[in-house]
Image (cartoon, rainbow, N blue to C red; front, top):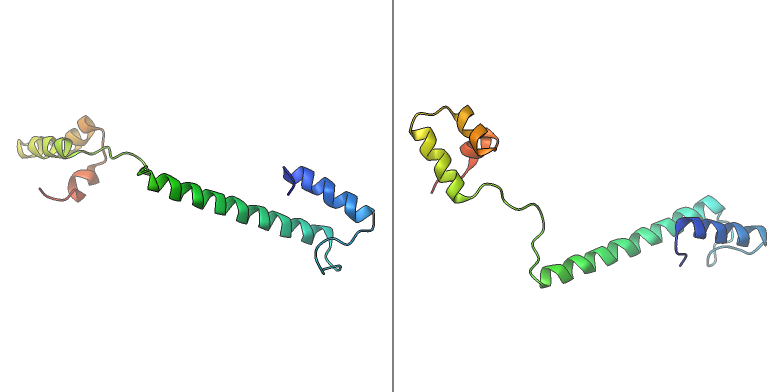
Length: 108
């Protein structure tokens, strides 16, 4: 497999100009069709490598995604401030979260 798409394009052009049939049993393919097929194969290889890498990371117990910003301690502090009578707008500004975080957080 070519190291890059540019290298692949050069290889395909050289073989096409030399009169060599490109592909296995598909002598009617044009250069753009061959490029599309080669790029498709390259995407499949990349997807397979990525899947194997994710599975290996998950086996090592690596967690994916952003770290949670809203801890139970922060949630309790925010609820206590609201119960003291502070407006939600001020509480969420103080805690640096969106106001829906206080509304949607599960109760203790």
